[in-house]
Amino acid sequence: MNDGIQEDLKAARETCWINEQMYPFSEEKERLLLKREDIEDASKRLARFAPLIAKLFPETAKDHGMIESPLREIAAAKEELGKKCGELPKGRLLLKCDSHLAIAGSVKARGGIYEVLKHTEELALAYGILKEGDSYEKLLEYRDFFAEYKVQVGSTGNLGMSIGIMSAALGYQAIVHMSADAKEWKKKLLRARGVTVKEYADDYGRAVIEGRKLSDADPKSYFVDDEHSKDLFLGYAVAGERLKKQMEEQQITVDETHPLFVYLPCGVGGAPGGITFGLKQIWGDAVHCFFVEPVQAPCMTAALASDKGSGICVQDLGLTGKTEADGLAVGRASQLVYEMMRHVLDGAFTVEDKKLPGYMRLLNDTEQICIEPSSCAAFEGYTAMLHSPESTARYDEIMKKAEGATHILWATGGSLMPEEIRLELLGKA
Ligand SMILES: *Cc1c(COP(=O)(O)O)cnc(C)c1O
Image (cartoon, rainbow, N blue to C red; front, side, top):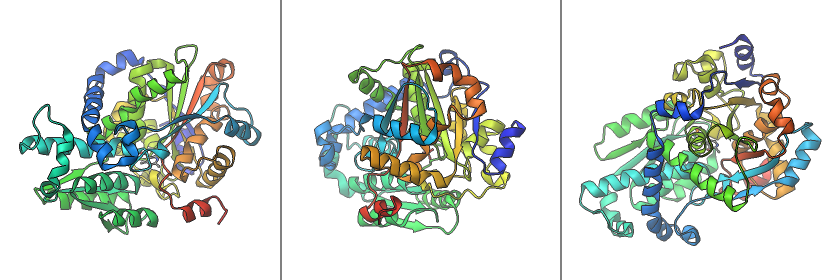
């Protein structure tokens, strides 16, 4: 890792890492472990389950059981950001509202729900409950069967909500192992949905280890492994084709002269990594993706900048891993995601916790959209782009000239926040 980056990370200073080892995606994709066909397979599986989802969660009926979020231009927010942050990159600014995905209210509704469905399909096929060509609505009659099985997961909050809510709805015994960082309201909401919540005084890593141990000891239990799961990753990656459709509907071009920049909050890496992989499959080198992490939990930035992958954790850098951005409070990155992103991700930014409420208020006041603090990390990539020497050196040309560029802040969570928490965070309680 170069000295500058290492010093910034260690000092918990905001920084920017630019990938010096980007390869053309058309070449790199041949070397990657997962392929476009894997995403297509995931997409088809989601389509098979859509009628069942529409029945289980009536709020998805209008989209026929497809769980997808709006893509909204946020011109008023952009104007306000310009006043506060100085020069911004040229081009339009949009918000991808995964904060408002149905069922789980966060980006985890993509990967988490997909993995529960995939496991359910495997179980149902193995026991002859489903045969090829059957309508999956049939599974509604098998709650007693699924009640004999457990689904478990370690989570800082939102993954637990997505896995827990979906598993419980299908009939499983759902158990979520939560870290000390997890917000009280997330635990309460899960318990209200019939999910068992186990709490650990330690961090997220400990919750995962304990959860996995308990699950492995039980042959009727399935453990969702956030650090290694290809299924979670592929569930997230389906976002690529979905965004392509929305961009076409809104008549937004993406090509070499109309580059797309995407800013994604990052924890263990699965959600932003999967989405990046999905977007790259659609737009290749015309799309530039950046992760954003808290200064105390920059696990993926450290993994990539040091080239050590999951062999380095934030504690190795003298950091605490603690952050108000609970969805991003992860000390060690996923090795799978590191390998998938090594030559694909454009770069990463870190952000101080204290900036997040300001971004949250700005979006709320200008666009009447409320997202949780973790989500707000996305803003930092966009606003820091032209103010960090590393990114400026590489992107100045495109950023200042490309009137035809589009920038997307990926809002990753927030719609399930209780009203009193929302008001408190907005400073309006
Ligand atoms: C989980 C989460 C992320 C990041 O996802 P990872 O897969 O952990 O990288 C970002 N924002 C929110 C709100 C999340 O809950």
